[in-house]
Amino acid sequence: MDNLFGGIYKGKIVLVTGHTGFKGSWLAYWLTQMGANVIGYSLEAPSEPNHIGLLNLDITSIIGDIRDLDRLNETFQTYQPDIVFHLAAQPLVRLSYENPIETYETNVIGTLKVFEACRANSVKAIVNITSDKAYENREWVWGYRENDPMGGYDPYSSSKGCADLLVNSYRSSYFNPAEYKKSHNTLLASCRAGNVIGGGDWAKDRLMTDIMLSVSQGKKVSIRNPNATRPWQHVLEPLSGYLHIGQKLLEEKVEFGEAWNFGPSDEGSVTVETVVNHVKTHWDKIDYEITRDPKQLHEANLLKLDCSKAHIRLKWKDVWDSETTFEKTVMWYKNFYENDSVGTTDDLNHYVLDAKKKNLEWSK
Image 1 (tube, helix red, strand yellow):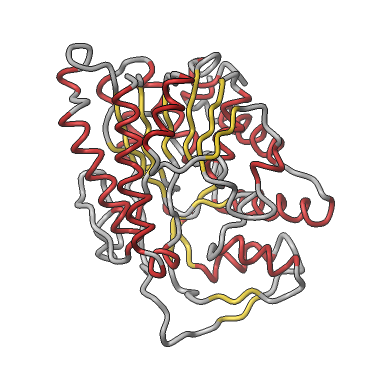
Image 2: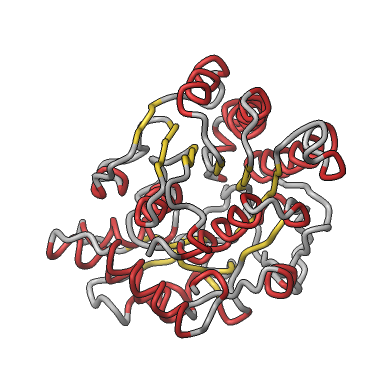
């Protein structure tokens, strides 16, 4: 495993903000498997159970708020990370309506403070994670490209658009590629991904989590927006993209310090109701009902990414089709609830093996 991504992460000090969250915990695990020294910086895990706790990783875990610049600087000065993967965020659309101040403070000002800590401590590489919702969504049938305008209807989406504008400003003002190795030694990239699923996610108001919790309680899951179409992908898909970008930045390849989309092929973009019917084939206890709320908050109906740039320049491709993604996700939860087992190791091993079969660049 430690030869993946050119073996670049073996022995590296890697700081992951948001390591107690869903994507952050999977990323921290993958990094440990490649021999990285992982420093996690995050709030307490947002749920019980939680993936990071089940993994019991041998990492340095710091419980802190990214809005606390003094604590961030203390952490950076103590551990001197080579690279930072910034995932910490308030990640939920519906919660952003309830608490817009916390959403903007975390996703914008928190990101600003992480960048300031990186700048003060001369971090070599920063991979900033935002969202496909950062784009100004016009309900287009085609995918958004990296140079399309940022925007956002709801506070969460808007905050992510703001964070991406912040990335552009810092790349121009402090980490300008033209000044690399002259006035600074930092490369900064921004990554955007779509709806990510997989085992170990217990955050509120997420489709797969709602389904699995309902099953565990013997209830039908309530589907509030059955026709919403999303680019569903397994969590390992964008993580392989983030790690590949991190590799390029650590190799001092200036041209990769840009914005990047990581999403599934077109067949991965399906409606919420289609997803539920797919997952039902893998666990017969799953059942659902559609609930219509006339006061339902606005959420986008159609949103997908154009990942041509990553396909062509990074040679990145998704590994699993939608059927495999749904199956892997359902079986992770089924084995957890019925057999008290955690399938993260098996899923990662199978994913890497399938990537090798496809001869993907990062897997060689």
